[in-house]
Amino acid sequence: MVVLANPPVVDQIPLLRSPGPRDSFAAVPVVDLSSPGAARTIVDACERFGFFKVVNHGVAADTMDRAESEAVRFFAQAQADKDRAGPAYPFGYGSKRIGLNGDMGWLEYLLLAVDSASLSDACTVPAAAAFRAALNEYIAAVRKVAVRVLEAMAEGLGIAAADALSAMVTEQGSDQVFRVNHYPPCPALQGLGCSATGFGEHTDPQLISVLRSNGTSGLQIALRDGAQWVSVPSDRDAFFVNVGDSLQVLTNGRFRSVKHRVVTNSLKSRVSFIYFGGPPLAQRIAPLPELLGEGEESLYREFTWGEYKKAAYKTRLGDNRLAQFEKK
Ligand SMILES: C=C1C[C@]23C[C@@]1(O)CC[C@H]2[C@@]12CC[C@H](O)[C@@](C)(C(=O)O1)[C@H]2[C@@H]3C(=O)O
Ligand SMILES: O=C(O)CCC(=O)C(=O)O
Ligand SMILES: [Fe+2]
Image (cartoon, rainbow, N blue to C red; front, side):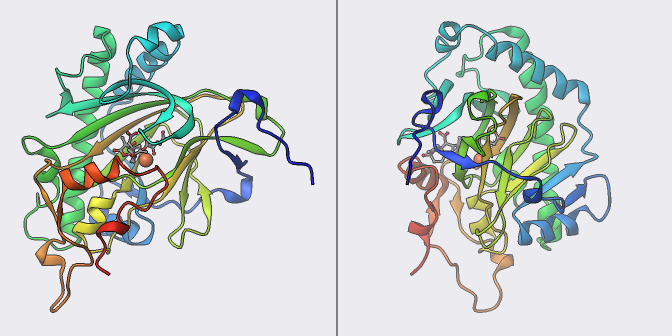
């Protein structure tokens, strides 16, 4: 058997089978956020897939376009200039290395801290005023979408307090992160039947993640049994919402955090923005009492978001981070 080595440009980056037309997830649940039925559709999608698409969200196309074009301008800079905005940890510019434990992907990114509804002042990257202003406008808007979605989840779950979930990401000290990912095209793999891994498979640790990308495809999700990967058709006018590990625990497993990954395109670059809604470090992450049936016990040992985050940063991207908190 002949084993082919990775082409040198993608050395160290895991390769994936290129998605074919049959892998497309045409049935992605679509939530019309302006419709009275949104809460029910969201709960159904979270139970079935931990993933859905949001339309009629009210965010102006201009807000998204401005942030996107500023991001494109940032990533078009010379490598030395971008490197000056690094390192990525705790916050800043990073390239190819994801996290601190050896994961690699065909991307570059900005990892940014959010305080209340805008970039944290302590996060001095990006420095350009126009980029910061565009990101702040976008972050304020996407955070409102996250809050509306979390309120709809509470309503759909029959929780009396409308803000039972949303307050966790809006209260003082909430741990919100914003990420701008840029996946350059990878022409070296064109026609080889494989693609470079842009962002390896993982679940997001927070409550929810709200994603928007330019029109380049690449996002894939694992269907509930984890056996099948499907490509999510891109839609630059919509947001895509992932259930995160913390929301899985808050609902005692009723909602499942969705495993997802990004596969690079051989010809087009992908730019994505992801808002990660996390609670304050001291927030206890345990099933909401109203969601526990009579005699039903939590499937998880108790922990705070701070404890979970600390443990998560010791794991590799593809690890099952919740496993160590499951009751045996
Ligand atoms: C390998 C890792 C990268 C990550 C921290 C971790 O150790 C495990 C979780 C990863 C993740 C996935 C969702 C978000 O992109 C992220 C910012 C997060 O909160 O958890 C990343 C972390 C990262 O890139 O630092
Ligand atoms: O860039 C994307 O489209 C998704 C990336 C992702 O899943 C993440 O940053 O956690
Ligand atoms: Fe993710």
